[in-house]
Image (tube, rainbow, N blue to C red; front, side, top):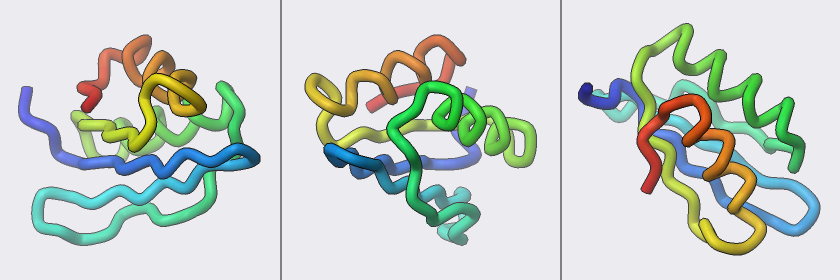
Length: 80
């Protein structure tokens, strides 16, 4: 399925930042994101409910971004 929203996660040691844009390039989310599995799930669930299929892009997928990758994969979101 083709992503309707592209979510970029800039991971950090104390918190992350999430920006999401739709296919037209409009920003649909741009806020800090706590390093918390429930908060990550909440954000991704909300974006799916409002916009449809996601592509989640994480800048450091093997280190502090591994939790974001795992949560996105558990939700069957595409990950890059």
